[in-house]
Length: 252
Length: 303
Image (cartoon, rainbow over all chains, first blue to last red; front, top):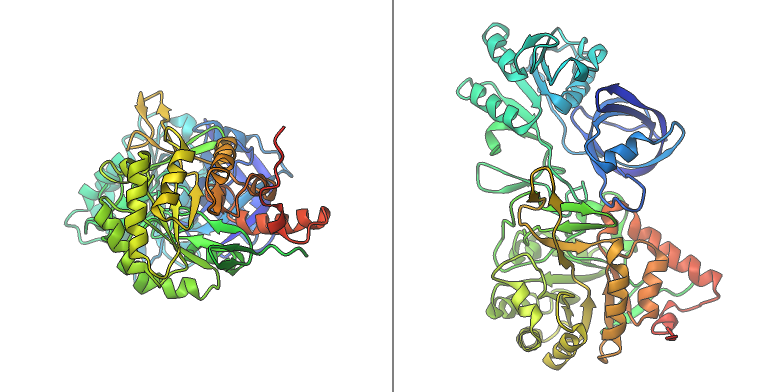
């Protein structure tokens, strides 16, 4: 975990309202799939960093994809190539796939697809079979297909049927689950999607891990701002104890 | 190389920079980024007698130049702190300030008695605006400020007492004098200002708690004014905070009368904020031929 003043190498739109930024951290960063960075907006008016999932990490170069949500992300989207950005990284626990888990199902929706790409990049070279079920709002939101196509099998769907079948990522996965029989399911997406996934996973005995999102303060576990509710009644810090949790252990 | 050390209630701080309660936990997380032994001190996450779960999320929001928080005193309880974190934190060689909160006067008395002699100082949070039945009421009225200070001080035989003042009051100078009369050894201010941020698409407050404490760069002028008022209303040392992001900000507080400063929100914007402020204080003193930072305290001349 480090704070670095990174140099922007690329920062451009890749779909409607979605940008991809690659920056050099200046030093090689050991990054696990599912970890995130906390980006400083750097204008003096926006005091909170923006937590964003890592898509790709190659040596000192890190790529993140982010949706324009408000002023902060809009300011990030205007950072020029060669510009500087303060980055705290790598943060969070990330996804961990056990040796004996050979077949992975990825269920990603919306901006939740980006950490799925980091899983593909880490686990395809390790010989895992990866079945990806990816949902976008519509065809204008479709992006990162080159990264997703590393999957053993890829199903892309949209909410309105303008690209692939008209369904959501959880429905696509649910109709295929008995055929594929994954050893583990990894997911990220909006909370209603994760709730639906939790229902699908109930009683299957297949372990399922989800990456959660929450408004954060420090991003490193000190301020207790970004908590989620655990089924045992405790609060867990999304930034430090997560963002990846066993779906059975969190209340969605 | 200037002498940055300051003395606060007989405790020697190697520099005047203290991590503000609620922004630095018990120090472990920031210690993963830099060695926190460079700090003057650390004020812990607000401790209560029993563990507390805190508020629902979202607990944080942003507005221009400031943030709002409503964490609701989530903490593992004072016993957990003593058992798991205290020795580690003391090993860092910095002033360990236990920030404490309670729902009743008896809570304050009990938690102070428990921490007496174990930490370098106890900081009384009587102004946390987020717990409906607790802090706020005690921090608003001068007679309550005096009473909670008196009872807490009575339970602290060996450890100095710092009372953290709320800015959401009629007169912070009057409340400062009340704390002084109650037996406080020093004062810290300002706690957060109560505010609200609205999500106009949902037509709801952003924070689950509806209101929250406003902090960050934007509150600094208010904080400096209040520190000036309080430092000149009492004869106790004052620890200033509110929107400090750099050495120059810290110097405003020191010149206005603060013996030391606390840094909070800036830790979120820049994880290295505190070490940078310490370096910056040294550089400023060197540039200005100041040998002892402590000599800059209360050197403000009014127009």
